[in-house]
Image (cartoon, rainbow, N blue to C red; front, top):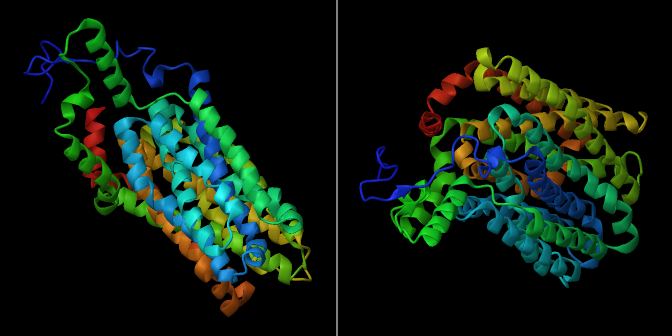
Amino acid sequence: MAPNSENGGDDNGRILVEWDGPHDPAAPRNWPKSRKWLTSSVGFVFCGLASISVSGYSISVSAIQAELRCSRLLALAGISTYTVMFGVAPLLLAPLSEIYGRRIVYLASTTVYTLFQIPQALAPNITTMLVVRAISGMGGSTAISLLGGILGDLFSDDERGLPMAVFAFFAFAPTGLGPVMFGYVAMLRGSPIVFWVQFTMAGLLTLAIFFVQAETRESVLLARKASALRKSTGNSNYAAPFDLEQKSFLTMIRTNLSRPLHLLAVEPVIQAWTVYVAFAWGVLYLLLLSIPIVYSQIYGFNLGEIGLTYISQILGAVLAMPISLWCDRLYRRNFATTGAEGRMYAGMAGGVLVSIGAWQFAWTSWSSVHWIVPLIGITILYSGLLQIYQTAFAYVTAGYTLYAASALAALNLGRNLVAAAVPLFGNQVYEKLGIHGAGSLVAGLATVLALVPFIIFKYGSWLRSRSKFSLMYAEKQ
């Protein structure tokens, strides 16, 4: 029921509880910068660990295949089971964070992620490994979707550029860090040590979340404030806006849990970015598969040496940061004329870099060419991927701030389903087309899709005008 403007409540006499003015220090967006960044930093680390879990496993596939006596395809399926759950679980967990708060969902999911590193280290067979990888993926899934929601809770649109750049960095750079950390470890000590190291890191993260992570969801904080007022005053009429909006528990659950799929089904903005980011994520996972093929078959590298080649991905992410910050300054400077589509500056740069890097990697991977030359292509390509990723998440978060976690969950679903499929057919693509043919296929697709940010830059406002959900949210601001 709508609030009554005369008594600050509704027609039943309930008193609406809101923040104590626009500068209330209890509101997350009014927190000191140090507290905002401390709260965000825990999420950044979790995002990085979830990425390491993919690439650390990927570089250990040969060891897992030998230890568990399974085919390479089954060993690679451990990447797929993890990423499927990584994409599907946020459809449930992200909306729950909008009902019950970010912190409790974060803490529960990191606990699951941590504990299920243990059975991965002790897995007696590939069936056990695949099952526990799926559960671990479910625990790690909130690393992306909830962090986007937290940044939306803490930072206004005009100050979100740097946090989103750091977010993208921690989502991407650790996919290169995993092989660097574990290449020689898996070769010399086997795969269990890889999971024990991840268990230790994840355990420390869970403790950090318990002691450091603050609740950021505004509706939950206001509901707690209303509850505290009811207890302290004895007046049961205090209610938060969230309390007034809910009709019944079952209706609340049904509405919130269906929101990500609803957004994906009806929102053209979400649909467009889901397709584009899914392709970018597919390229990323093809890289995880193709680099070992290229550097073992063409250059004769061993597993440890192959792991070190992924430094190029870390370097690409590092080089992308100043580009991202420069594009963010352009966005803020030209916002009056470009609107939200100014976010496409980074996306346009990223699309071009991905195309250039993909062609270089595909056609410099020859034994007669020094091994560092293809890695320069990977560095360029990876820098572009980060730009695309950051642009998508910043654009979507800005348009769906109130339900950013659900919007990002919808976005994550498409990209992770593609990522789950790549390990199952990636090797066959390289076997049938050859290293240069497969690389050319990826580079050609990248070149075509590089046009997407340019198209959105020109027609994005029209696309958003067809988004009823985004316009509805804008009217509430």
